[in-house]
Image (cartoon, rainbow, N blue to C red):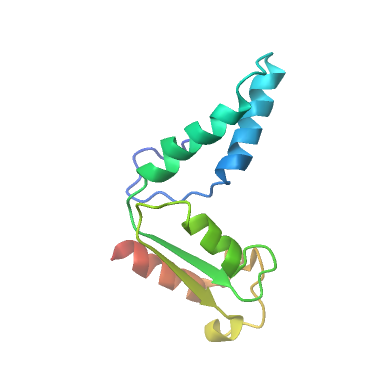
Length: 123
């Protein structure tokens, strides 16, 4: 993993499922000649990371996003059993927009989206 601002007050991150992370780590280790412990990685990665998160998590998804759907976002939230979580589904018209899609929140002029995020982070 890469730490951009280890001293930051707020940390935002995206993570893959334990199975996907284990597969990636196994590929890395296999490339170095280690091949005998892939099943162990899934258990290790799950208990090492997800159970340690206890901070509240709020996930925003956009109703017109074909990739980060409400179902996939809930699947991710369910990986954090010790964190209070909330899933918010927003439709583009609620924000005065025609389309947000998968990466539209990061486009110029999308401050309405980020106001909700900053309110949550500041609460």
